[in-house]
Image 1 (cartoon, helix red, strand yellow):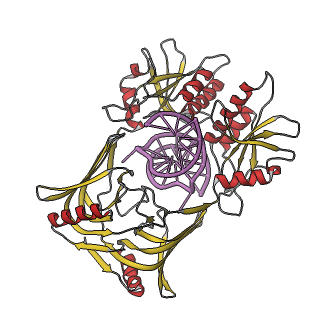
Image 2: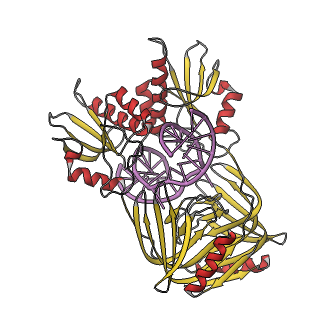
Image 3: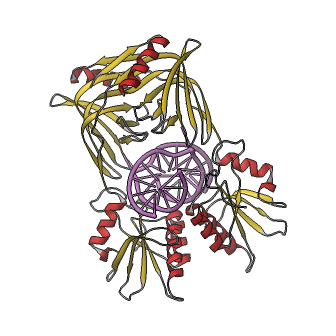
Length: 251
Length: 251
DNA sequence: ACTTCAATTTCGGTC
DNA sequence: GACCGAAGTTGAAGT
Protein backbone atom coordinates (compact mmCIF):
# COMPACT_ATOMS: atom_id res chain seq x y z
CA UNK A 1 0.00 0.00 0.00
CA UNK A 2 1.98 2.90 -1.33
CA UNK A 3 1.13 6.53 -1.68
CA UNK A 4 3.07 8.52 -4.24
CA UNK A 5 2.60 12.26 -4.12
CA UNK A 6 3.67 14.99 -6.51
CA UNK A 7 3.37 18.55 -5.29
CA UNK A 8 2.75 21.17 -7.95
CA UNK A 9 4.19 19.00 -10.69
CA UNK A 10 4.84 20.27 -14.16
CA UNK A 11 2.06 19.14 -16.48
CA UNK A 12 4.34 16.74 -18.27
CA UNK A 13 5.61 15.37 -14.97
CA UNK A 14 2.03 14.80 -13.89
CA UNK A 15 1.37 13.00 -17.16
CA UNK A 16 4.24 10.54 -16.64
CA UNK A 17 3.18 9.74 -13.12
CA UNK A 18 -0.45 9.45 -14.15
CA UNK A 19 0.33 6.92 -16.85
CA UNK A 20 2.51 4.93 -14.49
CA UNK A 21 -0.30 4.93 -11.93
CA UNK A 22 -2.80 3.70 -14.55
CA UNK A 23 -0.40 0.89 -15.39
CA UNK A 24 -0.06 -0.06 -11.73
CA UNK A 25 -3.85 -0.04 -11.29
CA UNK A 26 -3.62 2.67 -8.65
CA UNK A 27 -6.33 4.88 -7.30
CA UNK A 28 -5.41 8.43 -8.34
CA UNK A 29 -6.40 11.83 -7.03
CA UNK A 30 -5.62 15.06 -8.82
CA UNK A 31 -6.19 18.45 -7.31
CA UNK A 32 -5.96 21.60 -9.33
CA UNK A 33 -7.71 24.19 -11.45
CA UNK A 34 -9.58 22.70 -14.35
CA UNK A 35 -12.55 22.86 -16.69
CA UNK A 36 -14.82 19.87 -17.24
CA UNK A 37 -16.85 18.88 -20.26
CA UNK A 38 -19.26 15.98 -20.33
CA UNK A 39 -21.13 14.59 -23.27
CA UNK A 40 -23.25 11.47 -23.28
CA UNK A 41 -26.72 10.77 -21.93
CA UNK A 42 -26.87 14.52 -21.46
CA UNK A 43 -24.22 17.19 -21.88
CA UNK A 44 -22.69 19.63 -19.45
CA UNK A 45 -19.97 22.20 -19.17
CA UNK A 46 -18.11 23.42 -16.12
CA UNK A 47 -15.94 26.53 -16.12
CA UNK A 48 -12.53 26.87 -14.49
CA UNK A 49 -12.29 26.17 -10.77
CA UNK A 50 -10.45 24.24 -8.09
CA UNK A 51 -11.56 20.61 -8.05
CA UNK A 52 -10.58 17.19 -6.88
CA UNK A 53 -10.48 14.56 -9.60
CA UNK A 54 -10.57 10.93 -8.49
CA UNK A 55 -9.67 8.26 -11.02
CA UNK A 56 -10.29 4.64 -10.10
CA UNK A 57 -8.67 1.59 -11.67
CA UNK A 58 -12.13 0.17 -12.45
CA UNK A 59 -12.71 3.07 -14.81
CA UNK A 60 -14.75 5.34 -12.57
CA UNK A 61 -14.01 9.04 -12.51
CA UNK A 62 -15.27 11.62 -10.02
CA UNK A 63 -14.98 15.39 -10.12
CA UNK A 64 -15.63 16.93 -6.72
CA UNK A 65 -15.86 20.52 -5.61
CA UNK A 66 -15.79 21.63 -1.98
CA UNK A 67 -19.54 21.11 -1.73
CA UNK A 68 -22.04 18.31 -2.01
CA UNK A 69 -22.12 14.58 -1.64
CA UNK A 70 -22.66 14.15 -5.36
CA UNK A 71 -19.75 14.74 -7.71
CA UNK A 72 -20.23 17.75 -9.94
CA UNK A 73 -19.26 15.50 -12.86
CA UNK A 74 -18.38 11.86 -13.11
CA UNK A 75 -18.01 8.74 -15.17
CA UNK A 76 -19.30 5.33 -14.06
CA UNK A 77 -17.10 2.21 -13.81
CA UNK A 78 -16.01 0.66 -17.07
CA UNK A 79 -14.49 3.72 -18.66
CA UNK A 80 -11.01 4.00 -20.01
CA UNK A 81 -8.93 6.78 -18.57
CA UNK A 82 -6.42 8.45 -20.84
CA UNK A 83 -4.13 11.36 -20.15
CA UNK A 84 -2.26 13.69 -22.43
CA UNK A 85 -0.59 17.07 -22.51
CA UNK A 86 -2.04 19.49 -25.04
CA UNK A 87 -0.71 23.02 -25.37
CA UNK A 88 1.41 22.36 -22.32
CA UNK A 89 -1.66 21.52 -20.20
CA UNK A 90 -2.62 18.21 -18.65
CA UNK A 91 -5.81 16.72 -20.00
CA UNK A 92 -7.58 13.66 -18.64
CA UNK A 93 -10.28 11.98 -20.67
CA UNK A 94 -12.53 9.13 -19.54
CA UNK A 95 -14.51 7.42 -22.24
CA UNK A 96 -17.01 4.63 -22.36
CA UNK A 97 -19.22 3.12 -25.02
CA UNK A 98 -22.81 1.95 -24.67
CA UNK A 99 -23.85 4.43 -23.86
CA UNK A 100 -21.24 6.61 -25.54
CA UNK A 101 -20.04 9.05 -22.93
CA UNK A 102 -17.01 11.24 -22.61
CA UNK A 103 -15.64 13.19 -19.70
CA UNK A 104 -12.95 15.71 -20.43
CA UNK A 105 -10.94 17.39 -17.69
CA UNK A 106 -8.49 20.10 -18.70
CA UNK A 107 -6.12 21.43 -16.08
CA UNK A 108 -4.67 24.91 -16.15
CA UNK A 109 -2.76 24.14 -12.96
CA UNK A 110 -2.03 20.92 -11.11
CA UNK A 111 -1.52 21.45 -7.37
CA UNK A 112 -1.14 17.86 -6.39
CA UNK A 113 -1.21 14.38 -7.81
CA UNK A 114 -1.41 11.31 -5.58
CA UNK A 115 -1.44 7.63 -6.52
CA UNK A 116 -2.51 4.98 -4.05
CA UNK A 117 -2.16 1.25 -4.25
CA UNK A 118 -5.48 -0.08 -2.98
CA UNK A 119 -6.67 -3.61 -2.33
CA UNK A 120 -9.65 -5.42 -0.90
CA UNK A 121 -12.04 -4.71 1.93
CA UNK A 122 -15.03 -3.64 -0.09
CA UNK A 123 -17.93 -5.65 1.33
CA UNK A 124 -20.38 -3.68 3.43
CA UNK A 125 -23.14 -5.17 5.48
CA UNK A 126 -26.14 -2.87 5.62
CA UNK A 127 -28.90 -3.37 8.14
CA UNK A 128 -32.37 -1.88 7.98
CA UNK A 129 -33.11 -2.51 4.32
CA UNK A 130 -36.33 -3.56 2.64
CA UNK A 131 -34.99 -7.12 2.66
CA UNK A 132 -34.84 -6.93 6.47
CA UNK A 133 -38.41 -5.72 6.54
CA UNK A 134 -39.46 -8.63 4.36
CA UNK A 135 -37.79 -11.11 6.69
CA UNK A 136 -39.62 -9.48 9.55
CA UNK A 137 -42.98 -9.90 7.83
CA UNK A 138 -42.32 -13.53 6.94
CA UNK A 139 -41.17 -14.15 10.50
CA UNK A 140 -44.28 -12.59 11.93
CA UNK A 141 -47.12 -12.37 9.37
CA UNK A 142 -49.42 -11.01 12.10
CA UNK A 143 -47.54 -7.77 11.49
CA UNK A 144 -49.71 -7.37 8.40
CA UNK A 145 -52.84 -8.45 10.23
CA UNK A 146 -54.08 -11.38 12.33
CA UNK A 147 -54.68 -14.38 10.13
CA UNK A 148 -52.54 -13.19 7.23
CA UNK A 149 -50.76 -16.05 5.51
CA UNK A 150 -47.83 -15.31 3.17
CA UNK A 151 -47.79 -17.55 0.11
CA UNK A 152 -44.98 -16.13 -2.01
CA UNK A 153 -42.40 -13.38 -2.24
CA UNK A 154 -41.43 -11.63 -5.44
CA UNK A 155 -44.46 -13.25 -7.01
CA UNK A 156 -44.61 -12.43 -10.70
CA UNK A 157 -47.51 -10.40 -12.06
CA UNK A 158 -48.28 -8.50 -15.24
CA UNK A 159 -47.26 -5.34 -13.43
CA UNK A 160 -44.01 -6.70 -12.02
CA UNK A 161 -42.84 -8.66 -8.98
CA UNK A 162 -44.98 -8.45 -5.84
CA UNK A 163 -43.03 -8.14 -2.59
CA UNK A 164 -45.26 -10.44 -0.52
CA UNK A 165 -48.37 -12.19 -1.77
CA UNK A 166 -50.72 -14.09 0.54
CA UNK A 167 -54.24 -14.61 1.79
CA UNK A 168 -56.20 -13.09 4.64
CA UNK A 169 -58.22 -14.97 7.27
CA UNK A 170 -61.18 -15.09 4.85
CA UNK A 171 -59.04 -16.52 2.08
CA UNK A 172 -58.96 -13.35 0.01
CA UNK A 173 -55.77 -12.65 -1.96
CA UNK A 174 -53.60 -9.90 -0.43
CA UNK A 175 -50.86 -7.95 -2.19
CA UNK A 176 -48.32 -6.49 0.24
CA UNK A 177 -45.90 -3.79 -0.87
CA UNK A 178 -43.02 -3.16 1.53
CA UNK A 179 -41.27 0.14 2.06
CA UNK A 180 -38.56 0.72 4.62
CA UNK A 181 -39.39 4.38 5.14
CA UNK A 182 -42.12 6.95 4.85
CA UNK A 183 -43.59 6.91 1.36
CA UNK A 184 -45.40 9.19 -1.06
CA UNK A 185 -47.78 8.74 -3.99
CA UNK A 186 -45.35 6.64 -6.04
CA UNK A 187 -45.56 3.73 -3.61
CA UNK A 188 -49.35 3.93 -3.52
CA UNK A 189 -49.39 3.86 -7.31
CA UNK A 190 -47.04 0.90 -7.37
CA UNK A 191 -49.33 -1.06 -5.05
CA UNK A 192 -52.38 -0.10 -7.11
CA UNK A 193 -50.74 -1.44 -10.27
CA UNK A 194 -49.99 -4.76 -8.63
CA UNK A 195 -53.48 -5.12 -7.20
CA UNK A 196 -55.03 -4.36 -10.58
CA UNK A 197 -52.78 -6.92 -12.24
CA UNK A 198 -53.74 -9.64 -9.78
CA UNK A 199 -57.42 -8.74 -10.04
CA UNK A 200 -57.20 -9.32 -13.75
CA UNK A 201 -55.70 -12.76 -13.17
CA UNK A 202 -58.38 -13.85 -10.74
CA UNK A 203 -61.82 -15.12 -11.78
CA UNK A 204 -64.25 -12.25 -12.30
CA UNK A 205 -65.35 -10.48 -9.20
CA UNK A 206 -62.71 -11.78 -6.84
CA UNK A 207 -61.74 -9.03 -4.47
CA UNK A 208 -58.00 -8.48 -4.16
CA UNK A 209 -56.76 -6.55 -1.17
CA UNK A 210 -53.68 -4.33 -1.22
CA UNK A 211 -51.60 -3.44 1.81
CA UNK A 212 -48.84 -0.86 1.85
CA UNK A 213 -46.60 -1.76 4.75
CA UNK A 214 -44.45 1.25 5.62
CA UNK A 215 -43.53 3.21 8.73
CA UNK A 216 -45.77 6.06 7.57
CA UNK A 217 -47.25 7.67 4.47
CA UNK A 218 -47.91 11.20 3.20
CA UNK A 219 -51.41 12.66 2.99
CA UNK A 220 -51.43 12.40 -0.78
CA UNK A 221 -50.42 8.76 -0.62
CA UNK A 222 -53.21 8.21 1.88
CA UNK A 223 -55.71 9.80 -0.52
CA UNK A 224 -54.56 7.60 -3.36
CA UNK A 225 -54.85 4.51 -1.20
CA UNK A 226 -58.35 5.51 -0.16
CA UNK A 227 -59.39 6.12 -3.76
CA UNK A 228 -58.25 2.65 -4.73
CA UNK A 229 -59.60 0.94 -1.63
CA UNK A 230 -56.12 0.02 -0.45
CA UNK A 231 -54.75 -0.09 3.08
CA UNK A 232 -51.76 1.09 5.04
CA UNK A 233 -50.15 -0.85 7.87
CA UNK A 234 -47.62 1.08 9.91
CA UNK A 235 -44.41 -0.88 10.42
CA UNK A 236 -40.76 -0.58 9.53
CA UNK A 237 -37.59 -2.62 9.48
CA UNK A 238 -36.73 -4.41 12.75
CA UNK A 239 -34.42 -2.96 15.43
CA UNK A 240 -35.26 0.69 15.99
CA UNK A 241 -33.11 2.10 13.20
CA UNK A 242 -34.48 5.24 11.73
CA UNK A 243 -37.11 5.13 8.99
CA UNK A 244 -39.51 6.10 11.73
CA UNK A 245 -42.60 8.23 11.58
CA UNK A 246 -41.81 11.95 11.68
CA UNK A 247 -45.31 13.20 10.94
CA UNK A 248 -47.15 10.58 12.91
CA UNK A 249 -50.35 9.39 11.34
CA UNK A 250 -52.48 6.30 11.47
CA UNK A 251 -54.48 4.99 14.33
CA UNK B 1 -4.98 27.59 -3.48
CA UNK B 2 -2.71 25.57 -1.29
CA UNK B 3 -2.19 21.85 -1.02
CA UNK B 4 -0.66 20.61 2.20
CA UNK B 5 0.42 16.98 2.19
CA UNK B 6 1.57 14.73 5.00
CA UNK B 7 3.12 11.43 4.00
CA UNK B 8 2.67 8.58 6.47
CA UNK B 9 2.11 10.95 9.37
CA UNK B 10 1.95 9.77 12.96
CA UNK B 11 -1.67 9.60 14.07
CA UNK B 12 -1.26 12.55 16.37
CA UNK B 13 0.43 14.53 13.62
CA UNK B 14 -2.48 13.75 11.31
CA UNK B 15 -4.87 14.93 14.00
CA UNK B 16 -3.20 18.32 14.30
CA UNK B 17 -3.19 18.91 10.58
CA UNK B 18 -6.75 17.69 10.28
CA UNK B 19 -8.02 20.12 12.88
CA UNK B 20 -6.09 22.96 11.29
CA UNK B 21 -7.61 22.04 7.92
CA UNK B 22 -11.12 22.02 9.41
CA UNK B 23 -10.46 25.47 10.82
CA UNK B 24 -9.28 26.74 7.46
CA UNK B 25 -12.34 25.27 5.73
CA UNK B 26 -10.16 23.07 3.55
CA UNK B 27 -11.17 20.08 1.52
CA UNK B 28 -9.37 17.11 3.05
CA UNK B 29 -8.44 13.68 1.74
CA UNK B 30 -7.14 10.90 3.94
CA UNK B 31 -5.79 7.66 2.55
CA UNK B 32 -5.07 4.71 4.78
CA UNK B 33 -6.31 1.52 6.35
CA UNK B 34 -9.49 1.94 8.30
CA UNK B 35 -12.77 0.49 9.47
CA UNK B 36 -16.06 2.33 8.96
CA UNK B 37 -19.23 2.24 11.01
CA UNK B 38 -22.42 3.98 9.98
CA UNK B 39 -25.60 4.32 11.97
CA UNK B 40 -28.60 6.40 11.02
CA UNK B 41 -31.33 5.84 8.46
CA UNK B 42 -29.87 2.36 8.22
CA UNK B 43 -26.75 0.86 9.77
CA UNK B 44 -23.64 -0.65 8.26
CA UNK B 45 -20.25 -1.93 9.16
CA UNK B 46 -17.11 -2.14 7.07
CA UNK B 47 -14.04 -4.18 8.06
CA UNK B 48 -10.43 -3.04 7.74
CA UNK B 49 -9.23 -2.05 4.29
CA UNK B 50 -7.47 0.63 2.27
CA UNK B 51 -9.80 3.53 1.58
CA UNK B 52 -9.88 7.15 0.56
CA UNK B 53 -11.76 9.42 2.94
CA UNK B 54 -12.86 12.81 1.59
CA UNK B 55 -14.01 15.43 4.08
CA UNK B 56 -15.62 18.57 2.71
CA UNK B 57 -15.98 21.89 4.51
CA UNK B 58 -19.75 21.78 3.93
CA UNK B 59 -19.94 18.74 6.19
CA UNK B 60 -20.02 16.01 3.54
CA UNK B 61 -17.95 12.89 4.02
CA UNK B 62 -17.15 10.21 1.44
CA UNK B 63 -15.46 6.86 1.90
CA UNK B 64 -14.23 5.46 -1.39
CA UNK B 65 -12.64 2.14 -2.24
CA UNK B 66 -10.88 1.42 -5.52
CA UNK B 67 -14.19 0.46 -7.10
CA UNK B 68 -17.50 2.05 -7.91
CA UNK B 69 -18.91 5.47 -8.58
CA UNK B 70 -20.83 5.40 -5.32
CA UNK B 71 -18.94 5.78 -2.06
CA UNK B 72 -18.97 2.66 0.09
CA UNK B 73 -20.00 4.89 3.00
CA UNK B 74 -20.79 8.56 3.26
CA UNK B 75 -22.43 11.40 5.06
CA UNK B 76 -24.45 14.12 3.31
CA UNK B 77 -23.68 17.84 3.64
CA UNK B 78 -24.48 19.47 6.95
CA UNK B 79 -22.52 17.18 9.21
CA UNK B 80 -19.93 18.19 11.69
CA UNK B 81 -16.56 16.55 11.26
CA UNK B 82 -14.56 15.83 14.37
CA UNK B 83 -11.23 14.08 14.75
CA UNK B 84 -9.55 12.51 17.72
CA UNK B 85 -6.84 10.04 18.63
CA UNK B 86 -8.02 7.05 20.68
CA UNK B 87 -5.62 4.32 21.73
CA UNK B 88 -3.02 5.97 19.57
CA UNK B 89 -5.21 5.71 16.44
CA UNK B 90 -6.77 8.48 14.41
CA UNK B 91 -10.55 8.51 14.43
CA UNK B 92 -12.77 10.74 12.32
CA UNK B 93 -16.41 11.09 13.15
CA UNK B 94 -19.05 12.92 11.10
CA UNK B 95 -22.33 13.55 12.84
CA UNK B 96 -25.59 15.15 11.88
CA UNK B 97 -28.98 15.49 13.50
CA UNK B 98 -32.37 15.27 11.82
CA UNK B 99 -32.01 12.62 10.90
CA UNK B 100 -29.56 11.46 13.54
CA UNK B 101 -26.68 9.88 11.67
CA UNK B 102 -23.12 9.04 12.60
CA UNK B 103 -20.20 7.99 10.46
CA UNK B 104 -17.18 6.66 12.30
CA UNK B 105 -13.86 6.07 10.54
CA UNK B 106 -11.08 4.46 12.54
CA UNK B 107 -7.62 4.34 11.02
CA UNK B 108 -5.06 1.70 11.85
CA UNK B 109 -2.62 3.37 9.48
CA UNK B 110 -2.61 6.74 7.73
CA UNK B 111 -0.67 6.73 4.48
CA UNK B 112 -1.39 10.23 3.41
CA UNK B 113 -3.29 13.31 4.44
CA UNK B 114 -3.87 16.21 2.09
CA UNK B 115 -5.64 19.51 2.68
CA UNK B 116 -6.74 21.70 -0.20
CA UNK B 117 -7.96 25.25 -0.17
CA UNK B 118 -10.88 25.27 -2.60
CA UNK B 119 -12.99 28.11 -3.89
CA UNK B 120 -15.72 28.75 -6.39
CA UNK B 121 -16.54 27.30 -9.79
CA UNK B 122 -19.40 25.06 -8.81
CA UNK B 123 -22.14 25.91 -11.29
CA UNK B 124 -22.75 23.31 -13.98
CA UNK B 125 -24.94 23.81 -16.98
CA UNK B 126 -26.60 20.57 -18.00
CA UNK B 127 -28.28 20.20 -21.37
CA UNK B 128 -30.79 17.54 -22.31
CA UNK B 129 -32.93 17.62 -19.19
CA UNK B 130 -36.65 17.28 -18.80
CA UNK B 131 -36.83 21.07 -18.59
CA UNK B 132 -35.31 21.21 -22.08
CA UNK B 133 -37.91 18.76 -23.30
CA UNK B 134 -40.66 20.91 -21.81
CA UNK B 135 -39.34 23.97 -23.60
CA UNK B 136 -39.33 21.97 -26.80
CA UNK B 137 -42.98 20.99 -26.36
CA UNK B 138 -44.09 24.53 -25.57
CA UNK B 139 -42.11 25.77 -28.54
CA UNK B 140 -43.70 23.25 -30.85
CA UNK B 141 -46.93 21.80 -29.43
CA UNK B 142 -47.43 19.85 -32.66
CA UNK B 143 -44.83 17.51 -31.20
CA UNK B 144 -47.61 16.12 -29.03
CA UNK B 145 -50.06 16.08 -31.91
CA UNK B 146 -51.51 18.44 -34.51
CA UNK B 147 -53.91 20.83 -32.87
CA UNK B 148 -52.63 20.36 -29.33
CA UNK B 149 -52.78 23.55 -27.30
CA UNK B 150 -50.78 23.81 -24.06
CA UNK B 151 -52.66 25.69 -21.34
CA UNK B 152 -50.45 25.31 -18.29
CA UNK B 153 -47.26 23.73 -16.99
CA UNK B 154 -46.88 22.27 -13.54
CA UNK B 155 -50.64 22.52 -13.23
CA UNK B 156 -51.73 21.45 -9.77
CA UNK B 157 -53.94 18.41 -9.32
CA UNK B 158 -54.99 16.17 -6.47
CA UNK B 159 -52.31 13.75 -7.57
CA UNK B 160 -49.55 16.32 -7.87
CA UNK B 161 -48.22 18.77 -10.48
CA UNK B 162 -48.88 17.96 -14.15
CA UNK B 163 -45.95 18.64 -16.51
CA UNK B 164 -48.03 20.04 -19.36
CA UNK B 165 -51.78 20.40 -19.40
CA UNK B 166 -53.72 21.41 -22.48
CA UNK B 167 -56.51 20.65 -24.91
CA UNK B 168 -56.65 18.71 -28.15
CA UNK B 169 -58.17 19.84 -31.42
CA UNK B 170 -61.60 18.66 -30.19
CA UNK B 171 -61.25 20.61 -26.96
CA UNK B 172 -60.71 17.58 -24.77
CA UNK B 173 -58.38 18.00 -21.79
CA UNK B 174 -54.97 16.40 -22.27
CA UNK B 175 -52.47 15.52 -19.54
CA UNK B 176 -48.90 15.29 -20.83
CA UNK B 177 -46.19 13.66 -18.77
CA UNK B 178 -42.65 14.31 -20.00
CA UNK B 179 -39.69 11.97 -19.65
CA UNK B 180 -36.25 12.65 -21.06
CA UNK B 181 -35.43 8.98 -21.57
CA UNK B 182 -36.91 5.55 -22.05
CA UNK B 183 -39.39 4.84 -19.28
CA UNK B 184 -40.91 1.90 -17.46
CA UNK B 185 -44.13 1.21 -15.57
CA UNK B 186 -43.55 3.91 -12.99
CA UNK B 187 -44.01 6.68 -15.54
CA UNK B 188 -47.17 5.06 -16.91
CA UNK B 189 -48.52 4.86 -13.37
CA UNK B 190 -47.65 8.46 -12.73
CA UNK B 191 -49.55 9.56 -15.84
CA UNK B 192 -52.52 7.38 -14.88
CA UNK B 193 -52.69 9.02 -11.46
CA UNK B 194 -52.72 12.49 -12.97
CA UNK B 195 -55.38 11.60 -15.54
CA UNK B 196 -57.59 10.08 -12.86
CA UNK B 197 -57.20 13.18 -10.72
CA UNK B 198 -58.21 15.50 -13.56
CA UNK B 199 -61.11 13.25 -14.52
CA UNK B 200 -62.44 13.64 -11.00
CA UNK B 201 -62.25 17.40 -11.29
CA UNK B 202 -64.12 17.54 -14.58
CA UNK B 203 -67.91 17.35 -14.89
CA UNK B 204 -69.10 13.76 -15.02
CA UNK B 205 -68.32 11.91 -18.18
CA UNK B 206 -65.70 14.26 -19.56
CA UNK B 207 -63.01 12.23 -21.24
CA UNK B 208 -59.49 13.17 -20.19
CA UNK B 209 -56.64 12.05 -22.41
CA UNK B 210 -53.21 11.17 -21.15
CA UNK B 211 -50.03 11.35 -23.20
CA UNK B 212 -46.67 10.01 -22.10
CA UNK B 213 -44.08 11.88 -24.12
CA UNK B 214 -40.80 9.98 -23.99
CA UNK B 215 -38.19 8.72 -26.45
CA UNK B 216 -39.44 5.17 -25.92
CA UNK B 217 -41.19 2.93 -23.40
CA UNK B 218 -40.84 -0.64 -22.16
CA UNK B 219 -43.36 -3.36 -23.05
CA UNK B 220 -44.78 -3.35 -19.53
CA UNK B 221 -45.23 0.39 -19.62
CA UNK B 222 -46.99 0.00 -22.96
CA UNK B 223 -49.35 -2.59 -21.47
CA UNK B 224 -50.18 -0.31 -18.59
CA UNK B 225 -50.87 2.58 -20.91
CA UNK B 226 -53.14 0.38 -23.04
CA UNK B 227 -55.03 -0.82 -19.97
CA UNK B 228 -55.69 2.75 -18.92
CA UNK B 229 -56.43 4.02 -22.42
CA UNK B 230 -53.39 6.27 -22.40
CA UNK B 231 -51.05 7.13 -25.23
CA UNK B 232 -47.36 7.31 -25.97
CA UNK B 233 -45.73 9.89 -28.20
CA UNK B 234 -42.11 9.22 -29.10
CA UNK B 235 -39.91 12.27 -28.62
CA UNK B 236 -36.96 13.32 -26.53
CA UNK B 237 -35.02 16.42 -25.56
CA UNK B 238 -33.84 18.61 -28.45
CA UNK B 239 -30.38 18.35 -30.03
CA UNK B 240 -29.55 14.72 -30.59
CA UNK B 241 -28.08 14.04 -27.21
CA UNK B 242 -28.59 10.51 -26.06
CA UNK B 243 -31.85 9.39 -24.41
CA UNK B 244 -32.60 7.75 -27.71
CA UNK B 245 -34.52 4.63 -28.43
CA UNK B 246 -32.41 1.47 -28.02
CA UNK B 247 -35.24 -1.04 -28.40
CA UNK B 248 -37.11 0.79 -31.07
CA UNK B 249 -40.86 0.58 -30.81
CA UNK B 250 -43.84 2.60 -31.87
CA UNK B 251 -45.06 3.37 -35.31
C1' DA C 1 -28.32 -6.50 -22.77
C1' DC C 2 -32.85 -5.13 -21.04
C1' DT C 3 -36.25 -4.64 -17.38
C1' DT C 4 -37.62 -3.78 -12.95
C1' DC C 5 -37.07 -1.86 -8.47
C1' DA C 6 -34.41 -0.41 -4.15
C1' DA C 7 -31.51 3.30 -2.21
C1' DT C 8 -28.40 5.66 4.21
C1' DT C 9 -30.59 7.44 -2.92
C1' DT C 10 -29.21 13.01 -3.59
C1' DC C 11 -30.95 17.27 -5.14
C1' DG C 12 -33.88 21.09 -6.18
C1' DG C 13 -38.27 23.46 -5.97
C1' DT C 14 -42.40 24.63 -3.59
C1' DC C 15 -45.43 25.08 -0.07
C1' DG D 1 -39.33 21.57 7.64
C1' DA D 2 -42.31 18.20 4.79
C1' DC D 3 -43.59 16.95 0.25
C1' DC D 4 -43.04 15.96 -4.48
C1' DG D 5 -40.58 14.48 -8.51
C1' DA D 6 -36.19 14.57 -11.52
C1' DA D 7 -31.62 12.54 -12.06
C1' DG D 8 -26.13 11.96 -16.93
C1' DT D 9 -29.49 9.01 -10.91
C1' DT D 10 -26.42 4.25 -9.37
C1' DG D 11 -26.63 -0.49 -8.38
C1' DA D 12 -28.45 -5.18 -8.05
C1' DA D 13 -31.14 -9.04 -9.37
C1' DG D 14 -33.65 -11.54 -12.57
C1' DT D 15 -34.76 -12.82 -17.50
